[in-house]
Length: 69
Image (cartoon, rainbow, N blue to C red; front, side, top):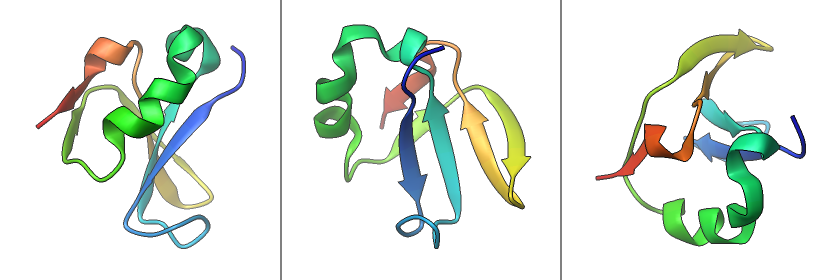
């Protein structure tokens, strides 16, 4: 699935509250743009929610599943 992009909320890793994991095949060539597009903004994210090391992670299937509020 390629290099993932992590968006951490509620603090920096490893003290974050939860994360969004966007797999490399979803990110494509937009990797650099994602940080600027999403940093410091309120987001609405659709996707599967799982836990990893007792913290929730949301896995969107496409970039259309992430909306800037």
